[in-house]
Length: 288
Image (tube, rainbow, N blue to C red; front, side, top):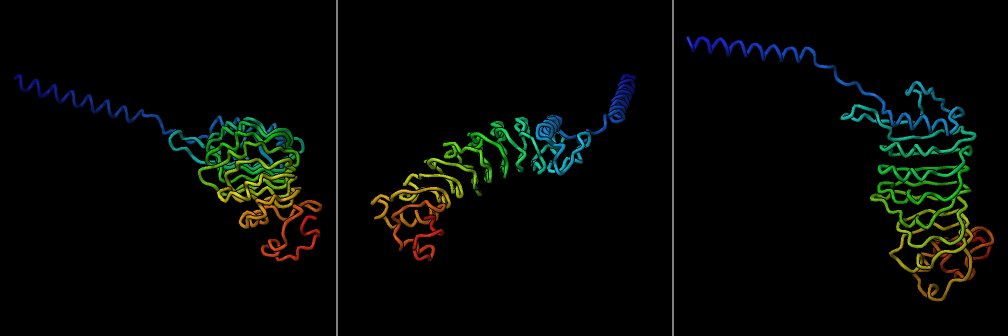
């Protein structure tokens, strides 16, 4: 009798557990559907509003993320939300600034900004974008010092800032040394004065207004190649550089020619002929 009672109890308990499991499956909530990151969407709306988005060539409907041209996103399968990974702000801005909220796009990999309607400062908050790989700023009226924080970004392998005539390049550009280097073009930005010392990677600094360059870039072969052509560099090459054929080769390759009316006054013609095939006669090609 005891064995029968025990068997009935076990059978009843098993059926109860199975029923509970069935109810659990029956009432299990549906899977979470992917959604656009709230933080990213709020940042984009602020970028649109401060950037004079109503005049962009690609018109956005702020109530419909599918109209947000120039925005690329990926699905975070853990959080089940779409995160912004690139932002190409289109031409058309007539009176806009770049919102500091751009620093809230923590998954951003590429940022491109262009158009003379953009003014104001480049936000230092870009320096918070630790995953940024490409930053391109073209033909804007932005002004002031380029934030030093940008040059400390570890994965920024592509840096192109060109045709912005009101920007200042800080000495901290020498900190720029991403883990994987690709290209650094800082062309035609009206940078002037002395080229910063200690630069660690190859850079194109042509078509600016630099007037002086440390001779260490010519004499020290461990220094990177800098394109310094079409600046306003001038003066006399010292004897210790003139007597170093390797240094002279580096000098001619980096800093020749200059803008018309500028250039070193005592470059031996043999170096010019060797690398450029010119006669060495002073003229427009040589910046003299």
